Image (cartoon, rainbow, N blue to C red; front, top):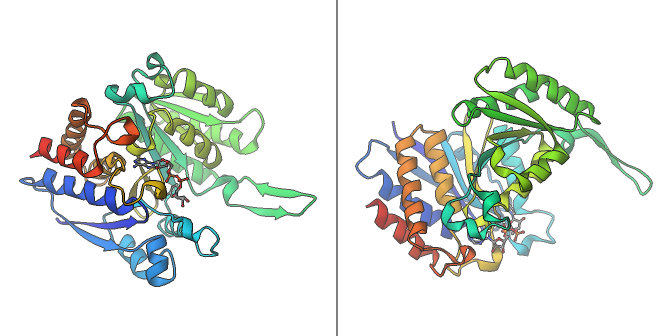
Length: 347
Ligand SMILES: NC(=O)c1ccc[n+]([C@@H]2O[C@H](COP(=O)([O-])OP(=O)(O)OC[C@H]3O[C@@H](n4cnc5c(N)ncnc54)[C@H](O)[C@@H]3O)[C@@H](O)[C@H]2O)c1
């Protein structure tokens, strides 16, 4: 059956890296049974320009009825002082689609290990996934209050919210290294006590998976001193926000990091972890790997097309291995030169 993919190119370097990734996809699927159609929609700053809002109804309708969504990046400095901002579209889309799980794989190809801020011996063998709860916790809890004298934020987690994100993590670990690290602050927070209790309960359903608990402060240190010890890290919204950004600097460039978010409706959103990089917009220098690898995540996780995903990943690895790298990785290849090199490996 033909899969429907909603394509949101967004702002800044978004259109450049999306075009690159879609060219790669087109060549990779040639001669296979995988059939897809693309539905291009405005989202973010470009949607504010064309529709007056970052998430127009026709964009949302397309996303809701899609089999998967590809998003490049949104954000434009021209909206910095505006009351309507591109980023509001992303929060609205997450809410509408109930995207409660955010997944960031962190893997560092050997050929770019020298770009990492860590010494090579710390980086060797790093291959883990960060699973962050995205719709609960202190970012959304009520009441909140801000006066000159007092400020209140409320951290709330329900059993149901914790159970569903734990299951995501354990299912993922089953297909990987069979280890889950659950991160909390159970020595201080009530929400973390419940978090830890439920993590231990769910672990009983997955006897093949080893569960370890880490306090968030200790996990922050281990991400620097022993990142190769992790397989699947699962944590709540606030801790995940901080730890996933800490983890994202390990490869040395944001330009090669994909992510996915999925939730209750079944449709998943695939996007690079970085923003719209307005500083390099339109210069044909952006690294398209983050978007290409977002496409491989989609092929694997939404469409069960493991072979196709591996084929594309092997091609990008081979191109990097041949020393063809974009500027962020210390190379000189342009976006289009890198993309054509990947396509040449696939053809
Ligand atoms: N999910 C999203 O769409 C998302 C995420 C983060 C930030 N933003 C928005 O993006 C805009 C820019 O934010 P920022 O500059 O703080 O962060 P950014 O991630 O866009 O850029 C940070 C740095 O990384 C570089 N970079 C990012 N992606 C790259 C790539 N593929 N290749 C090479 N270099 C790359 C940029 O040139 C810049 O120097 C803001 O409007 C922000 O709100 C959007």
